Length: 596
Image: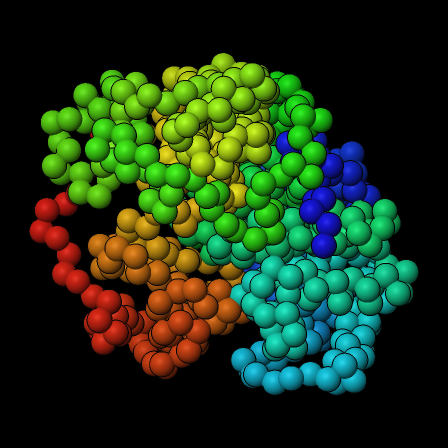
């Protein structure tokens, strides 16, 4: 496998692709990065869908997706599209298809684009373990042609586009048994469908590789682009980015910034959707802010991509492994080596928090940067690098402030030139500011620090973009949690609402958070329906999944253990299940204070 998912590990230039028309909206090519979202309304409720669509358009959404669970439900897309057009909007409508090829064949009559999930479009996932001979595998692919080929032919006839969108949580048994639950499996699943489309002369499609775990998502997209590059110049299809089940609040925004932002910073991505467990309209400002940050970075930073070639890269972009450093002790705190990623702060912020450190629990500022002895250098300065590498003892090193180069590129260059024994202190920004808008600050920290941690780079972090001491500290820990570097609270995988959802995701998620938020290290998945449920819950300890209207199924890992629980009782039953598996502790009586 080629390591070249980008011309250089330090590039921020956008990957060149062909342009695909989604109705009047072009994706890829010279078009801007497009922002899209998905309706939460029931697809059978025409007026609700039309009004929600218009609200999204007003907020700046450029492509709107609608679920179509069955052929009968898909037929109502005719009325929804007509209603939107009657309101004067030509926003493209996309049908979201899972499990039902006949629903796709109906939907393509009315919409500008159809999204299919290769893992479940023509496969019924049974979590079966079996060996496929080459002949059996070939027969499976022939069956795919029979099921998927007609949709390709109809899309050509009607001028409709398509998204071949793999989800980590819904890979087919065929793919799982040959490639495993891996980024490679995600890529091969999508390529199976792409080859069928290309064999019919159809090229109006985009790819996506979505996962709830940012590390998995980043690796899958990189692997996809590397494979497309290997396959040839005419495999230059646009890429849609998204983190599934990102959740809500700060956590959902940070997780989205890590997954989406880091790939945009690598030049990958032509259209994005931020998936929050909130009303869809709140996704748009977050997506817009991410695009703005990337465009500002590309226009205001020096291009240092020629400074480092892939042959000098010291990390594997397709498989996480933490950079191997030697341990240091600073201010009585060990960092580097196998120690957890440490949280630095400034002397000013430490002084502001000093009177309430005892109340902060796990959310402690650990090391004061001014007293740490950290060496700040320009990673382009080969003499400075050589001097540190010549030292007998390991040193803590960071990038100096004020440089006009992208943060991710700066620290990747530092990591590639610095001997691995020297620990690295990451920064969210090299230009500390007093911007009163917290959203760009939050997204910048998630994108820059989260991306580097997912590369395996970094032994400590320093938030400089947020000046409020408590908020700065909370942001540092939330970025570490979302990137999987340091788990200090309950971890939630919560999908966004859509027309498939069988209960109120927002209120239910908050109710579950309220009851379980003190269970440090426990991972709970909250899923509105079964589409991504068992697969995306593979890494979760427990799952809460809509099984039928008003009924909940509870999972341990990806195994359903309790069925058809009335929604009013389901949170209590979830707590009972957690207790049965010895994961429950009583909530502390004193509330941890981390805000200013």
